Length: 402
Image 1 (cartoon, helix red, strand yellow):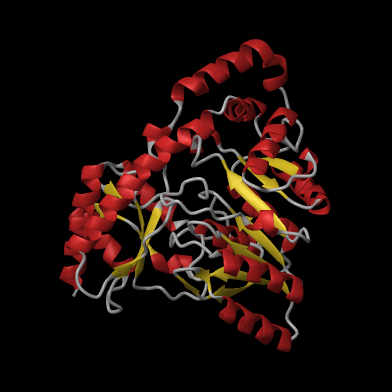
Image 2: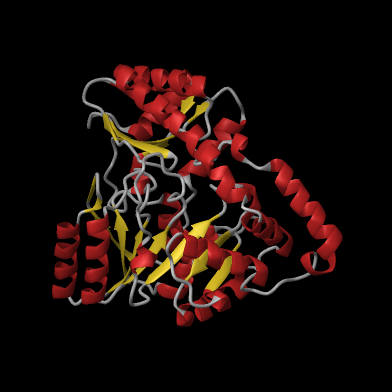
């Protein structure tokens, strides 16, 4: 039987395959140097400590960890997360303000369910994290893009957007941002702009979702306080993940928010998966309790800084004139612009088939569909020799188009 389109909900027309996931299919076949996914290096995974945590958890607490858990998460893990965030300068009044997630992607979908009605205005960075765009798109908001420079969202531009929306009697529901080592650009919102963003959120009465996967992976001696640590009104919902600091395969994240929001998040999560795996939560609990994560950060930073520097050097050497790129202070990505007459979405096919190299075309990161001459490059996953060779091939492919 061929299922006709009439069986599907209208909202499914808004679903779109992730370009990153589609590219990973090519990479899985082998023979491709991939700058595509945002994958951590397997060399950073604390395998032995994870094995010990699993063994200990099952042998000593198996009755609890192999059973259903609470929707909010293990109390032990949430208590350690409270300590962990307070170490980062974020005040947590109660562990019940924390919900453990089955990956931070679940949090993005949760935000869409809880916050977005059809037509609501949602402010997004230009460019913005692709998985957030895809998660929110299902709920059919009106996306409004915000201009950025090397210091993140440009506040004068944001204020102009807010004034224009207000003049049209349009209410902003929330602003989504990755303020530190932004995905995909790698840029970091300055402290002054963070303060101004909070002022504007108060003045124009909108919420902020702070997605913070990378702020512990910095390569420069810069102390950037999370937005949540500066939030005096409860406007900031804080989202983070264990994927970059422990292991993405555990699919663990967490959200911290005002108590009233947390109640809604818990109800939404119950409809998604009832609870996050207690056994996997126990691994994260042990990793925090025994400072496995904290002690592993220096290894992660050292390795990724070396790879970042290698990619920046290769870009300088092999990319043709007319190209430019970001210099991130941390995170996993460099964002590049090529001459405007080169469409990177078309170029990717040649790169994969002819040059054996993959990246993520940048246009999908732009809610206004600009960025046709941009690309996101990941440096954390490929080997050092692959970084130089891959950028060399990519430079050749661009030159051929020119």
